[in-house]
Length: 384
Length: 161
Ligand SMILES: NC(=O)c1ccc[n+]([C@@H]2O[C@H](COP(=O)([O-])OP(=O)(O)OC[C@H]3O[C@@H](n4cnc5c(N)ncnc54)[C@H](O)[C@@H]3O)[C@@H](O)[C@H]2O)c1
Ligand SMILES: [Zn+2]
Ligand SMILES: [Zn+2]
Image 1: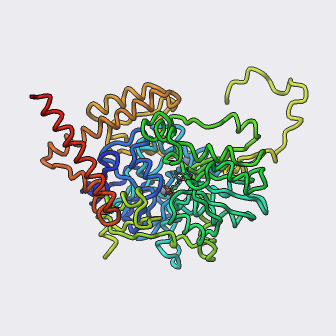
Image 2: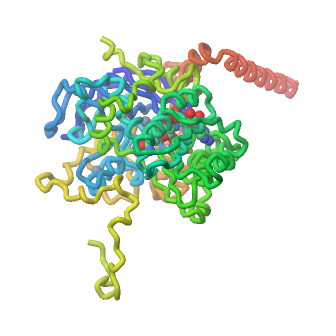
Image 3: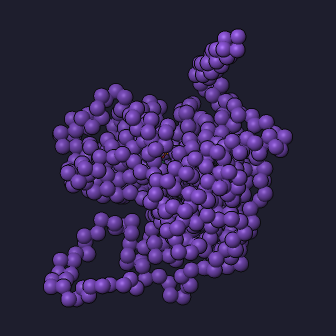
């Protein structure tokens, strides 16, 4: 089969690999019909995630048709078109049973802090991902969810990560009616977080980035007030000025370790990799938020550690809430929101390209060329 | 059950201020769901390990499923194995894995060449997209790299003379 093949930082290509087989009684093999590149994949692509082995296949956002099932799979049948949450979750461990499907303890031998994630380095379990024609799906009775007949596959593929992550970012922000919400990052996740902030009753939504076309998109789609941080001088001072000097009630970090905007963090975190990426957006979030306010983090950082102003978290009495999105927990509610037209995920897709163009798609998305917000790849076996 | 050297019931006022609403983790973590399905085994049988697996020393055993892609090999594999002598809490663990990743890139090129394949690095880096959407940037980058290589070549020639 054709599968993405990571060769090193900024180098990916499509190669032939054997079709995966069921390795566990509850596995399924899924033939991929759509797969996305995510901002999280960029951390791998930039060589920031430890234990990203050459020869790995990335891709944690995919939908597809069930081709084969293991002997104990009961809820899926061959031929079902399913959307597969990016978290590999057993549904039975103490964490899954509390709804923490992003923190399953039964899917990753290599790191206890990180759950199992498709195509996300050995630090996330060493699974091959969905940027391929076929993919192995463990715990097939737990994660995969049949795509409703009425749902557009382009909406479905964004329900595997972007929509739940954006939604959970807003949910963790503990927004109360009328709150002022600042979202750092106008990528797919930040845009979705800003859109969902309204569902929780926000009174004002502000989005910060430095990519003009993304800010334009956020202004119309979320809709939100948008600002380019390069033109703000000190973003913290600016945010206080426009929020009666006290700061926003909540700040959401939808940027993660690839944040731009501070030379020192870029040098230590992004270039030298002594930090788990650059945490400048998080730094701004902590220093801008109102005292007693909430900082919600969905931006991903490496496991090493980061320089952040933890002293001010204490001084200001800030509550920090963060997690990998618990996709399975949120799916029933989010499918309802999509079917009711309250969220329109597929509007984020700017590029739909053949899987064969994967090298160019990665570069386009990483370098933010051609107005790219979300690229979707379609394997040849799904093009008919 | 964890060993408890102190019996809580002997503490004056134990639990008097417990407040179930004081739970900032809800609804991400919903303990009310914790009952579970008694009819279902809580853990499935384990997948057969058929490749070398590296396991965090913070775990007591293997989980029921795990990935089997690209097992450790070569020099990078040796570094990775050493990294797994340290816990996830050690800087050394992650920095060694990062070092192994860099070594692994060189191994990848050697592996390609060994299979008679010269990796098309510009294509892997998406040069077509760069040409289509950022041509001036590409020309600039090529010019800078070309100039630096030319300069290096000149310096080497002067040294050699
Ligand atoms: N927690 C989860 O479950 C989860 C799931 C998916 C993605 N993520 C993470 O969310 C983050 C965003 O994902 P995405 O797909 O939207 O990625 P993306 O790379 O498309 O978007 C990030 C955006 O942040 C902007 N940015 C850079 N520096 C900034 C700064 N200092 N301030 C404000 N904006 C800045 C970039 O210009 C870009 O538009 C990533 O870190 C990703 O790994 C987390
Ligand atoms: Zn993703
Ligand atoms: Zn679990």
